[in-house]
Amino acid sequence: MEINGKIIELLEEKSGQSSNDTWRKQEYILETEGQYPKKICFMVWGDKIDEFAIKEGENLVISVDIESREYNGR
Figure 1 (cartoon, rainbow, N blue to C red):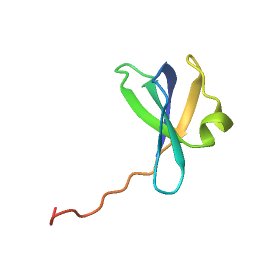
Figure 2: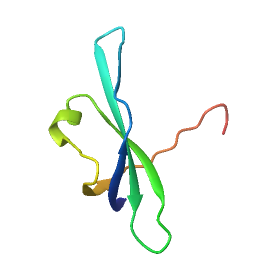
Figure 3: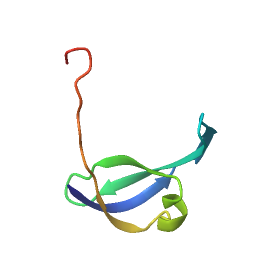
Figure 4: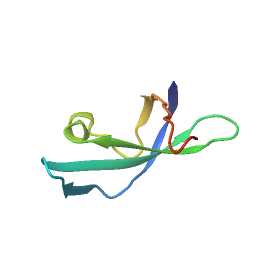
């Protein structure tokens, strides 16, 4: 699924230590275009944060892959 929009906010980058390595994640708020804009939060992990170098005010097309798994019979 592809979503078009504009980055309206960069949330604080978070990092931590796992049993294997150090991790980083950056969350962004994207506002869709159209008559009824929606705000969507998405995140980028690890080295992709620096590779993509997403800035506030930037127009983007993001691709998302939605998946669901069974948990406790649901």
